[in-house]
Length: 87
Image (cartoon, rainbow, N blue to C red; front, side, top):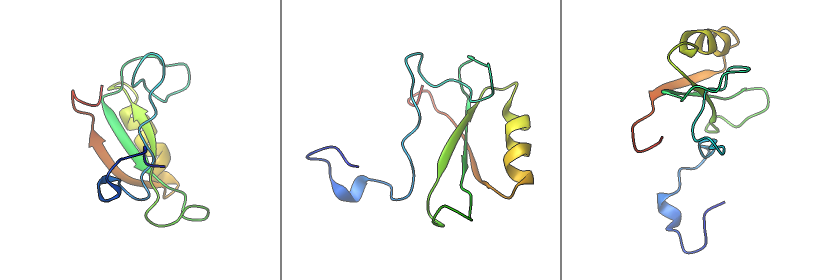
């Protein structure tokens, strides 16, 4: 949901906000607390609308493992590097 007063045209439809925890953007791999460098955008076509995007964040060490997991299930949509402005 957009913040009050936000320009509705500036909000990306169907893209969840990046998950930011108390330690910032960290890898989504189980047990990993390393800073994330990559945004793996995905959806499950059986339950999500076509334009919906969820996020798994990955550090350099887990990027390929998480990418392969999502791709093998047909869930992976985009892979984007996280810029310094995201971290």
